[in-house]
Amino acid sequence: MGASASRQSQESRDYYAVLEVGEDATQDEIKRSFRRLALIHHPDKNKDDSEAATNRFAELQRAYETLSDEQEREFYDSERSSPVVEAVPTEVFEEIRKTRTKTQVPARPPERDTGLTAWYFSSFLSSSAWSGYDDSGKSFFTVFRLLFQRITEDEARFSRRVVGYPSFGYSNWTWSGSDPEHKKEGARFFYNFWLSFTTERDFTWEERWNPKSASHRQERKIYEKENRESRQKARRKYNETIINLVKFVRKRDPRYKLYLAEQEQDKENASLASGCPRRSAKERHRPLSGT
Image (cartoon, rainbow, N blue to C red; front, side):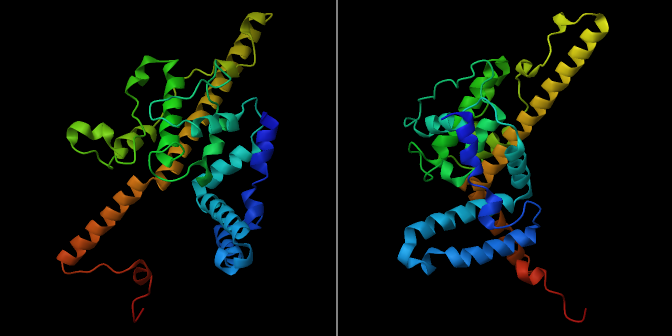
């Protein structure tokens, strides 16, 4: 499948169209539309055509999950408006998902000089990118462990400093690691590192001009300046793309969800121990009597 076909496939899943809202819709409008459509297309209300209803409902959930999060919506909008590139993201996506063993690493992408470009990651920003949360071939942990391993390999071609890049890990890893000596086998270590990711790649392939072809010194300086700006722009976009990907993954990581639940439980326990039970979220927003 070529780049054009890949982009068409992405566009066919226009999340704004799925939710029947405009691109300038507010969060309240998105929420109301999702609730209305969810009631219509819920599988329980369409038992005569449950399979189609299930697929439609899952699509609604994916669309709402993306557009209801400001950061994910911003990234989604930027990727939709970006120009078609020569990359074939779906090929890399399927290649990684088909990898079955824990040690097997997917082959290099077609662009051996550039590695994965920002557009490649669009295929992974959906819950349909994985199946299950164990360590099988297409699971959440296998897909993203191999994807971040691929990113690390691309970085290693430009710097030796990537040797210590942490792994995404496995389903049995805890949030903090089993003990201080094994903190690198904890999801927290992975996210702390990758949320401050800065690429080692130089993006020289983004340069538009060959300074040696300049007819005079001033023209050469202009070429060099524009090349530098092109590299910096591509570098910023790639860094932002990786960090957005990490945020997307963390939000769905069972290890992170468990950590948040434990933190909330600790707060509840501390509140009960102090004799001042915490009010529920609903109660906290309820006006006090007499005000």
